[in-house]
Amino acid sequence: MRLLLIHGVFFLQCLRFSQQQFPRLCATTEALLSKECCPVWEGDGSACGASSGRGFCRDVEVSDLPNGLNYPFSGLDDRERWPLVFYNRTCQCASNYMGFNCGECQFGLFGANCEERRESVRRNVFHLSAAERRKLISYLTLAKHTVSQDYVIATGTYREMNNGSTPLFSDVSTYDVFVWMHYYVSRNALLGGPGNVWTDVDFAHWAPAFLPWHRVYLLHWEREIRKLTGDFEFSIPYWDWRDAQGCDICTEDLMGAQSPRDPNLISPASVFSSWRVMCSRAEDYSVRGVLCDGNDEGPLLRNPGNHDHNLVARLPTAAEVEFTVSLRDYDTGAMDRSANFSFRNTLEGFGNPQTGLGNSRVMGMHASLHIFMNGSMSSVQGSANDPIFLLHHAYVDSIYEQWLRRHTPEQTHYPEFNAPIGHNRQYHMVPFIPLHRNIEYFTSSKELGYQYSYMLNSDQRISEVLSPYLELMMEAWPWLLGALVLGALVTMTVAAVAATMTRMCWGAWPWQLGEKSSAFHLPEREPLIISSDSDTPNYHTV
Image 1: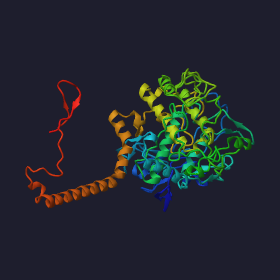
Image 2: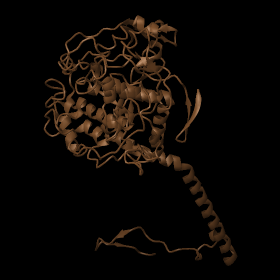
Image 3: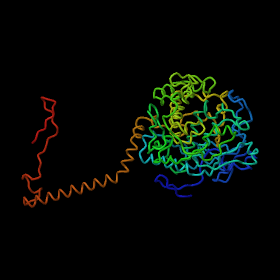
Image 4: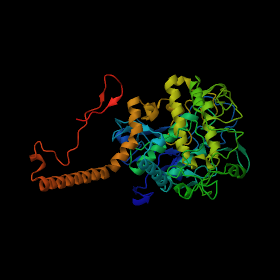
């Protein structure tokens, strides 16, 4: 452990965190050659916590149903039939448990035996108090500077690892594990050698799994922040960008204003100006035929609004969000960027948000925000480098939640086969370990332990809006109490002086004067009286 001071907040940093990608215990020659990732749960010293009934080490089962036609290869990419290239045995956890060693609880469950159900609320970032905003930035910074001890990232393909005999992995921070995950799931397929890549493939975008995959991504990120900080009340805030005229969260007290010296950089007054990016050079990796190695690739870039206006004319409107949510079909046709009247495709940004037609020349909804940011966030593979990514996708997830609640689809509504590779109903999400299937997150957020503040009932919404003001009052209470006490003392002092002067002038204390007029007696006024002849208020002095 070590004590860190970040953005004015002290943290006790424990170096055993993170919940996804390659567990360090499974990134060994022994694990890779045996193709088994079943680490011991420290709670009972058994693999997958088997002795406590938390889970068991079992063969991974993958679906053999056909994929779409966008990817015509087999056996060339490590993500095919995930995670079989690396592991064919992993921990499969019992009902309430989760994690690469079944040491965690399912989302929304807490307690030693994962039997306590709690519900968190994701709030509008503009409803956070000043203290909550500072805490959010501090937590992001802590995650950016804490090396993940549980997980590592792959810097080479399985073939480059000599089929497991020469592991190629690297350490990164907890935050950058998530940056790498988003890169890895969306990267081009490496077919062997420089420049030999297949670009029409993405295991988390351009197809049905777009929304379930990002839902799981945010849930894991939220959990890691809670574990890292010890703040189990933390929830990701969302940015409601409907009808915004610009990046209204790009301020010094939130995600950082624009640098006055270079419009592509973030203001030095923001901690994000010192952030460095990784996995942001997709074209370079393709030319060289390599994976991102996790190295520093320069500062975080952002120049909102100075983008190609032929692609994005403006940010999405409330009317476009409503049109999108009104679409009844989750996905249609080939279930890719050409899908017409598809809720998923329109929300992702490739369906026109006014007509619902796919392959739109103008990007809308989700995609329009990425292009509008005009920087690190504008590259699909490197977009998670910008922390705005999290607030943006939290709002996208809330729109997904709106659609789920309005249309209440059956799980059979999600495509079972012929979706682009990685997107069928039973496909394991790349590159998550523990394993998650796409269909498991085609369900309401209430089943996963969280809600969005604007979907709560009216009393809950009022409480959510007032909470930062109540917190401000609580912070100011000692000062208010001091002022009240001081005011009372002053009043008592004035009264004592007045009484003493009355005694000196009239030879008696004020309460002894009876019917005598006091020098300090003021004429009384009756309560407000309405004349019977007029509605005009009249004051009468007694």
